[in-house]
Length: 148
Image 1 (cartoon, helix red, strand yellow):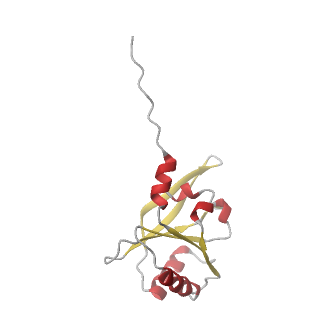
Image 2 (cartoon, rainbow, N blue to C red; image 1 turned 90 degrees about the vertical axis):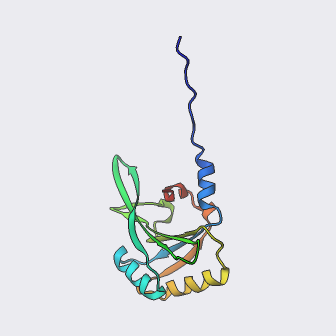
Image 3 (tube, one colour; image 1 turned 180 degrees about the vertical axis):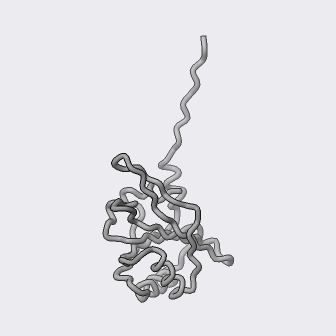
């Protein structure tokens, strides 16, 4: 008689905790195209956000949706920056944050509060930005959609 193998179950809660450990999430309202917003952001803050091969794919209503992710890493820091486009073809990566056009996730290193406040102020002064807020990651209902 053949022996049945055990099912391995992926602990997504642990993955979720590890991914967001010491991370910071900003919500940005800027109703312009993502490539324009990234260009203005890079120019204003002297950054180098670039589109990469990362896309978040979700299936909703029997359709596939692909959300772009821009990435930036400084050579002298462990801090990683990911800029998510929250909307694609009428669907939202984080449906509970429909009013946010972009989500900026920072992770991988400690974030100084003074630096974060300066960065948020610089984002606010960027072309077409209407609002920037720091979001509590543990309060975001669909945060697992940000995992890649």
